[in-house]
Image (cartoon, rainbow, N blue to C red):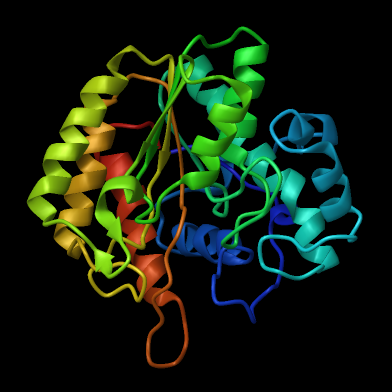
Length: 287
């Protein structure tokens, strides 16, 4: 399983409720230690440019965040977080390029994309790497249609807002789990409906040239912001996605996850991401 990772995409913003800034490092170390990946599975990449970010976000917002004149998605002006942002989107873009070239499932160990809208960071998301990736590849003529399979439990409102702002509804389909299973009082529907929803959106994605899959850990029943799927059901989710899309260009990332154990560690989240990586390998992606 190929992954696109550089240490520059990590920020030690450990005080935040969301671990997304530092989670890539922990995930990669965990997968290496457990033999899920080897050192030569890790590929470097180039960060995206300001122009790439400004293609899908208001240019002034991009400049202000990167120049520390405006709060990022963590609601701070941390220089380390700002420096990591071109690399998080760069990782997603590089994974998608590899997926297109080799027609396989590839991992970008990143989070913090789908709430970021055209003009504002939101909800631990500063720049929308899903849209940066999709629009860049559309502009280059490498794809005609991109499907976003967003299985983070929260609605990808920023993704939908950018699609509408850029008039790309006929080129990018955003299938957001959170649009159907998140409610003001928590998770709104039974897991059996999720299974049916997933089958439907995979069928709808059959014609896409590229699928971007957010394999969120936060739908888990024990997640403080989740509460829908058991560990077994989440593994079934991942196996369904990887097996259905085997031999197709698929770039996936980590998305959300907020569980902690008694010591405050994010080990429960790491376990769920570990299960997703193992599902990718089991489904037949090259090791």
